[in-house]
Structures are given as structure tokens and as C-alpha cells.
Image (cartoon, rainbow, N blue to C red; front, side):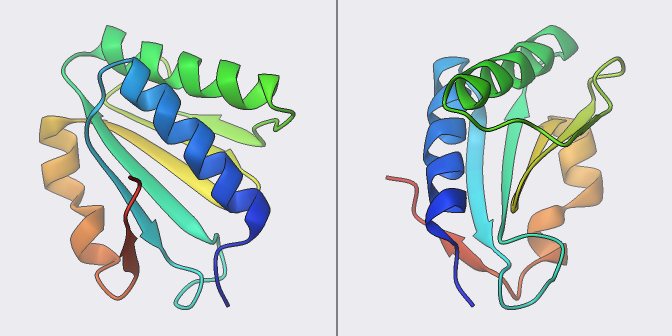
Length: 117
């Protein structure tokens, strides 16, 4: 399998929204060949809960505006790890400490990192 065209559009729009809100260390991992939960993970960091919530809000606004609705959002109130699911793409928005602790990049090391440029 590979990342679908729809998932690629979600990734493009979502990572642009994250960049607009100054998200750090944005990574996209293609997990389509190693997992059935999604085609890709988008992982990004923010410096504080307000920034992470703003990142989440911007992703939701841009993707909703493009016709994609999220099917789940978790962790918004705490904002040390916000998870947002859009079809076959899962966004993980972390503070640095929580990102380092869970280290999803290591957990999904069998996936392929996608160049978002």
C-alpha cells in the first residue's frame, strides 16, 4: 500500500497549517505498509499548551475548510499531547517532554519518513 491521494492532501494542508503556527520538528511517517490504523502519522511539537491548542485549531480550521472533517480529537484540554484523526492521517501534537517520553518516531521506525518539502 501507499499513502492515498486524499491522505496526501490532508498531510499537505495540515503540515502547512502547523507551519503557520510555528510548530517545531514536523515529521510525517508513512505507516501504510506496517499498520492498519492509518496511512500516515504527522508528528509536531509546540512550546506550551496554548501554542499546541492553536496548532490544533489551525489544523482543524484549514482541513475543515478544505472539506475534511476530523473523526476524533483527544487531549485538547490538557494540551501536552493532542491527537486528531482525519480519515487515514493521525496528527500527534506534543509538548517536547511528552514527545520525547513516548518517542513515536522510534515506535514507528519501520515506517518511512516522508519529505514534506
